[in-house]
Length: 138
Image (cartoon, rainbow, N blue to C red; front, side):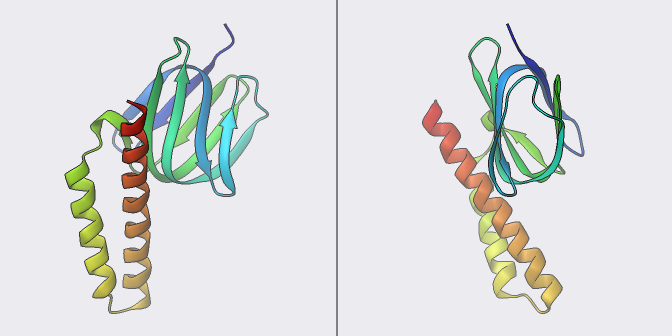
């Protein structure tokens, strides 16, 4: 079977490593789909979910808070500061973090505070969306 090796790595640990038939993830200009023997590519990715269709037909979802994607014909590497397996996403924690980011947005004292709060809010909104998408697949 034709597969491609996939590694999803966060700042702390390797989140996923294995063979896949297909990988879909949120590129800056829209959804990217990667198949084995894909043309080499390096690009930024947005916060959202990486969908990995494994060799056995099962799917794995990993939420990423943005990052870098490197594609080689036989390998896909996703590097993200924060990456969480779909099954480890937590509704309550995500909602609390979103509320905290919204509060920071309201209390922003400077352009830097505002930009940071907007970024955190975007990441949390993407995580909640990824969580809902993951739950629907189950």
